[in-house]
Image (cartoon, one colour):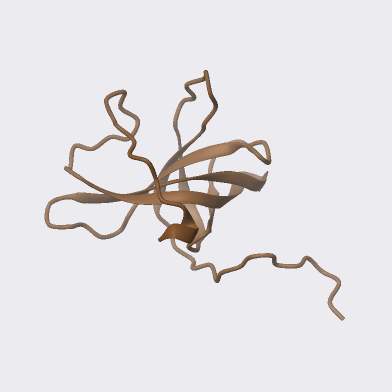
Length: 125
């Protein structure tokens, strides 16, 4: 019998390595964006390598650079969720909402002029 760690994931994760930007989102505070790279992802979670460990339970906002373009436009995945574990430079997030964004090549999610459109919940795809 295996008494090791139990995998509680609902969906299969796929090993993809995409650039991302992330920040803890808190009311009344404007956090700086940090950069990272995804390790694996599914429709309801993502693990990534980043800087410091982040507090478990914190709400986080992610902008993931999607590997496909639409004509001359960039595609980004904007997701929000909660940190389920973090340590040794890696973090896992359970995604609570997401939305694909198709933008011009000059798009910068860290710009003060960027407008965030309300995201969809994973159950309401």
